[in-house]
Structures are given as C-alpha cells and as structure tokens.
Image (tube, rainbow, N blue to C red):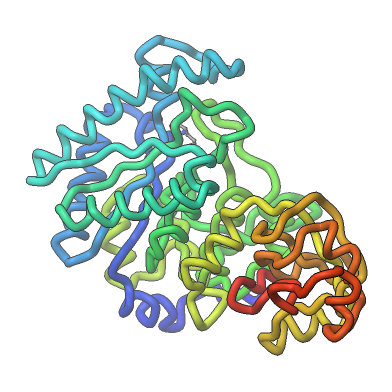
Length: 386
Ligand code: GLU
C-alpha cells in the first residue's frame, strides 16, 4: 500500500495549480443533519462555494438529493426500490432541490444552472462535447453549474448509477484540476481485513491498489445513501488516471472547503497517477467510448504499447473478440487478459481476423486490397489504461 498517514507537503504542491474544481455533495449531508433543514444546509454549502469563487476558483457542483428530497416531500420512509417510484421521487425532489440552490446562489450574488445528465450523454461523442462546451460557457458567464444524474429518465442501461462516478466523469470531461467528494466521514481509513475494524486515516494515497479496493468493500446502508467508499475509490481511479487529484473529506461542516484550500491535512488525497495529464481524445477513449471488441496481444506487442509508446501492429495480435468496424473503440488485452490500453481500430473484425499475426508486408495479399493503414491501432488513437 503506497500511502502516507500525514501530509508532507503534497496538498500544498497540488493546490498551487488548482483553478477548476468539482465538488460533490452526498444526500445525507443535505438531508440528514439533525435539526437543520435542507434549505439551511444548501445555504451553508453555497456560502462556502462563494468563498472559493472569490478566491478565483471555477467551481462545478455535483449534488445528490433529488430522491431524498422527494422522500421528504412525499413523506416516504423507505428508499423507493422500483424504477418508476425512484423516478417519481427524483422528479418531485429535483425541482425543490434546485429551488433551494437558486435561492442560496442569488443570495450570494450569482445564478446557478441545472444540468441533468445520463451516462448516454457522456458516452456519445457529440453529446459529450456539447456537455463540455455548455459547462465551459456556464463558467464563463459566472454561473454555478449544479449537476445531478437525470434520475427521472434513467433506465439501467443508460445509468451512471451514483454521483461519485458521475463526478469523476464530469471532472475528467472538463479537466478539473481537483475533485472533492464531500461525505459523512473524514476520508478513507485503514481497515483490518479480519475484524473489519477501522484504523488510521489515510492522508495521502500515492497509488490505488487492490489492497485499498478490498478495504473499501461494502456500504453503510443508510436510507439516503447510494454509493459507499468503493464508488469513491472508483471515482478516484478515473480522476487520478486522467492525471488529476481527488480528495475525500467530511462535509458535515462545509467550511472544510476553505480548510482544504488552506492546505490543511483533512480527508484523504489521491494523487494523480500520471505526470502528463491525458488529453481530451485519450479521456474519451479511456472512460467514455463504449468498446466494441477486444484484441489479445503477445508480450512483445504489450510491452511496445505499454512501455515504449508504440502503435499496435497486426503482427502482435494473437486473437480478437467482438464485432467491430474500422474506427470503433476496442480494448487491448495482454496474454493474462488484463486490459493494458484502449484505442480506435483501423480494421473491421473480419479484416483483422485475416491479418492478425501477419507482417506488414503481407497485409495487401491477405486482405486482397491495399490497406489504408498498416497499424491495427495507431498510437495517436490509443491510450494506455493500465
Ligand atoms: N442522483 C441521486 C439523487 O439525486 C443520488 C445518487 C447518489 O447519491 O450517488 O437522489
């Protein structure tokens, strides 16, 4: 486990370059604080966001709470289970929730703007671009973008499912320098895997490995909660692989945001997993494009792609799965069937099955025509994901 229990200057180093930040707030922080109304909690949150904005930061908020607000308004005791009931509660609650955000924002002298997204909006390349442009435009006019999943139209196939993941997707999409997940606990704690007992807080996570993921299994079962530590770690994985940082912190007192930007050692900071931030096309391939197939490659090709920055040639491909056309996204797997990269393929599955394992000089003969490219996946359209 590559972790530190105290901050040794990592926060200060990372914060120096933070301009754009995504803040996610969970339902319980808004709806489940004794003797404090959701109106009051939203007002406190937006007041703290106003402080960040005054410091020159661009803030995007991802808020949960539609279903929970609907439950309050409709006096529903148990979290709805059926899709239709969840959708109805979200539709009732989202309206009220945004009313609270707009009241709180205008009291601070700016407007908020609602964006309701589904996974389909983020997977489709054109809609993905639209969302990104819309967010940039909202920031440029000084509005506070307030994002939630579009729960009322979301069937399982197009669902992101939880707002930790949605926040990571939004952060990756708009290249936020830092993502802050506000929750009900002060970051991630070590867990004794035998007894389940929680130990010391992890201040800095340098590398997210399987040991940490195992420690995060299971959620707390609160009636308002959706994710748990595991969805937060998946979010951290996406954000840090994009090349940015993510912090999990206790949002009971929203002034934690100022503490974070003051460099205080609160919460758990996940450091970027790569020095060079992914560019937009790489992010799209890695996290948004839907893979249509898989290419299994030999050790030499895997090393060339993963370590040497090379394109994937047909000669290094051992086998393939799926039905894909030229231009589709495929996963590239090593001999152990681990994903090492994703990329846009230059051949259909039919063509590639004729030429896998073949040398470049033989492609024309095997295909019966001159290929448009000799690489199966060109480096410019490939991203290493391992
Ligand atoms: N979109 C859901 C809601 O607003 C919450 C999902 C989550 O908390 O992760 O109720």
